[in-house]
Image 1 (tube, rainbow, N blue to C red):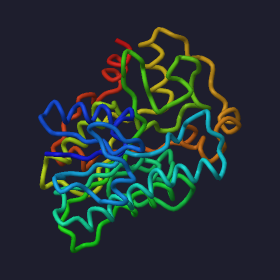
Image 2 (image 1 turned 90 degrees about the vertical axis):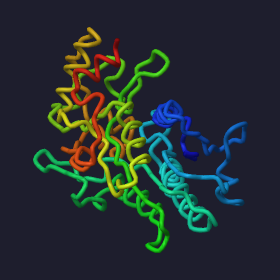
Image 3 (image 1 turned 60 degrees about the horizontal axis):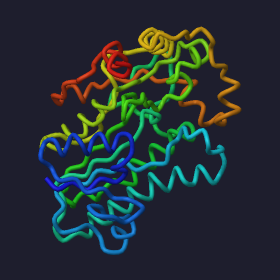
Image 4 (image 1 turned 180 degrees about the vertical axis):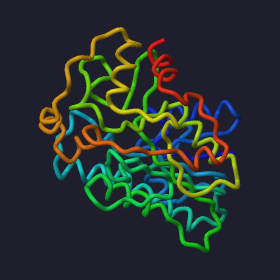
Length: 295
């Protein structure tokens, strides 16, 4: 397939692009800047999608946990534009294309589900309108929806806290501990819906290549873990101490209370539909994932 990917050069997007290319698919990034082998968002807005386009993926999104950005109206506007506007743009381009792609796959996040110590969430669970992050996820997903009479298969992949290795460097969406500089966040009992970046890429490939697969898929590991579980295993693998808890107050001051919720609170999310669809995880347990990150 010839696959156009928004956000194709980021941490997840670059891993997905590599996986697709290894399987002989042709990948074209959709980028803010022009260059050889890619198209721009302005191109999509003004011209639409190229005629030869078998699939569209959107992973675009400003980094929620960027510590260099203050939590203010300007940053929230960037978060929304990079997710909601790009999905709307692609949905409009698909709707107006004379030859439509076979499939449209977009990212979302587990922030769609309400944080809870007791509730278990599958792809069929409700969520989406109880705080800023949940509303952002809802708007993100709604913006990609095509009208019913457009015969294009659609899927949404709700991504958990990603970890992996890139260029010899450990990378993760989880900020306080990935350098071994801290311990649990608070008491550490909040659920930690983690996933290895290879499995995120693998789930997208699985959805793209399987024509009977559609709807929502949770991109989280099948092994449940709390923040304390993650911290303990990561610390042991890195041979570093992790006895100093990261106070919730400190995260609220650095990131803002609404944003810090992504680390301070957690959801017990299960990849029920992902597993039932036939996807096999490369890193189904936390120990194998952290071992790969620190090897």
